[in-house]
Amino acid sequence: MERKIIFFGNYFSKFYEKQNNKTRDKIDYVIDIIRFIERVLIQFLKHIEGTDSLYEIRVSTTFKQIRIFCFFDEGQVVVLTNCFVKKTQKTPKKELELAIKLKKNYFRTKTKGA
Image 1: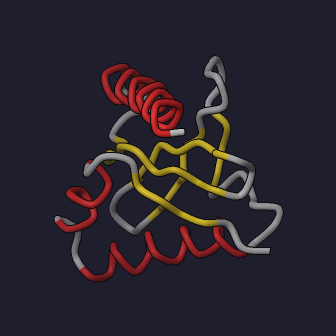
Image 2 (image 1 turned 135 degrees about the vertical axis):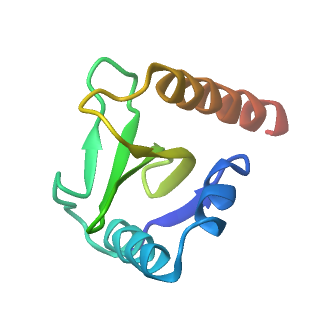
């Protein structure tokens, strides 16, 4: 089983490019877990309560906690949207609202293209 990982918008790639090599390697490692492992542990992928099937990919490094918002399309496609360094217990409202907006735009765009 292999999931396809795609990006919607340039939020993830801009964030990724700013990270050092060690952090990029860790992000790649967690994304590979999501790509290849059928049942992903909650420490790497967690549903965000109160949302319509929005998830956060959880990347932990020695110095920071990174969260990458994502959702599924057609079961095996994981769409990455925006991401941020988590500094508090609560997810920043602005980041969550952006992820919800990007998900709606993704499906709206997809429907128009079909």
